Image (cartoon, rainbow over all chains, first blue to last red; front, side, top):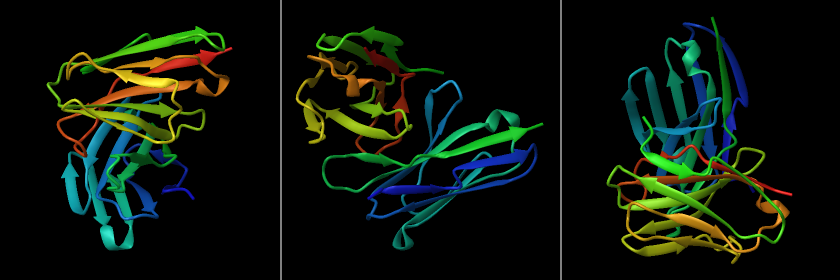
Length: 110
Length: 112
């Protein structure tokens, strides 16, 4: 089955609103990263957060390892935040495989 | 700012041909990876290469092989392409395995 599930699949916000993205995973994760993929396709790692809460700029990620879920909160969204947000986990099987979800497509309108 | 460089950006070829994609990172990272992104945007690891140790995803067909001259370069060779190889191939690097990944812009392969 699918290793990583993200919700919602798409989200439309007015500029200035906050966004809450969810990631649920079916296996134990030794690593978890959130990524941003621009409409042009380039992929950027936002932060690594296997457990607890981490902040960077307007982003806050909270991962509850025991419950196999992580969230990404984007505060005061901007039009330049539009793109796809991907959650990825490493199950720690020794193959160092990052399993990616299908992503949440975020559109921020002015 | 891009620090993982991939060439070419696009490649169109026919079934059975051999192709090779290049990747170079200027971050001084010790680990490099190749990922395949399919038409549904799902990314799957193909290879990771750390301190000359190659870790292979067992689902990757044998026609794919990584080639590395030093820790800053990891190329991908496909011996005889198949239609299902059409995808975007993303190269990435990190300081160590499971650290933050830095990706290149990708190479889009179309197999006719």
